[in-house]
Every structure is written in structure tokens, then in C-alpha cells.
Length: 135
Image (cartoon, rainbow, N blue to C red):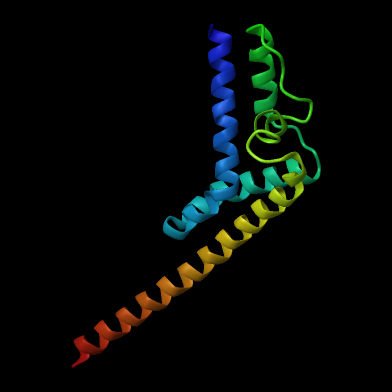
């Protein structure tokens, strides 16, 4: 039973990792320092998608599933096992990878825009307060 729990926890961590890869850049709109956590995760996700790097969570999940008497994940990993053909049709895999990349780029562009807008507003407020003090 313990191995099954470990396998399920690895599956949940996989799902959380995917969500953070795709949507984590939006956290930087509110909390800019999260970009330091998200950027390496997004780059690693890019490496998994383009280069074929292995995800350590896949090893953990396969190990736990084997020891629990369950079958391993598909050789291509978590996405093919749990999502492709289940959540979306198999022929949408590449367009969805592209769309995920676009979402990450959009989130970073939005974070830059948001920070600049906020910086300008803060600067304008500071200048207005300074003018009031000098009167």
C-alpha cells in the first residue's frame, strides 16, 4: 500500500509540475520573484519536450508502480500515459505543446508589462507626492 501511495503522490507531483510549467509565469504578475523558481522549471519542461530529457518523477512513479504490482507508465512518460488520448486526442499533442509554449511566453510578456505599468504608476505617485511636499 505504501508504494501505491508513493506512486499516486508522484503522479500528483507530475500534474502539479505540468501546471506550474504552463501557468507559473502568471504568478510573476503578482509576485515577481516567482520568476526565479519558474524559469528553471519552464526551461526543464522545454528540455523534456524538445530534447527528450527524462523527468525524475517518472522514475519515482515507475519504481513505486512496479513495487505496488502495477504496470509502469508508457515509455514516453506521464503525458502519454495520463493525458494523450484521455484528455485530448492523440493528434493534438504537438499543437498543445506549442500552445503551452505560447502561454508561457505570454505570461512572461504580461509580467514585464505589468511590472513596467506598476513602476510607472509608482513613479508618478512619488513625483506627485514630492510636488505636494514642495508647495
